[in-house]
Image (cartoon, rainbow, N blue to C red; front, side, top):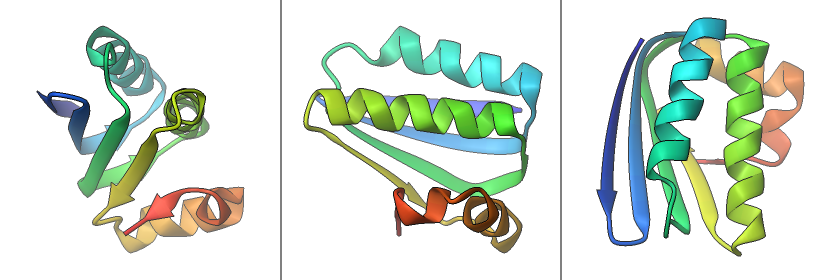
Length: 99
C-alpha cells in the first residue's frame, strides 16, 4: 500500500494505491492521525485502490466521524467499481460523499 498525503491549510488530500488490507489500514490510520491537526476537509482519491477490507472501511468511518465532530467534510472520489461494490454491500454508499 502506498499512501500519499498532501496537507494545505485546513484541507488534506489522501491518495491510496494498492490494497487497503488490515496492515495497510493501520498504516493509513497512522498517517491520517499524524496529519489531522487543524483539518476540517478530507479528500480521498481511490483511483489506484484495488482492494479494501473491513479494516479499511473502519478507518474511513473513523475519518468520517472526525470530520462530523468538527463540522467538516470527507469526500471520496475516483472510486473503482470493485470498491464501489464493497461500499454498496456494506452500506457505506448511503453516507459517504462519493464523487
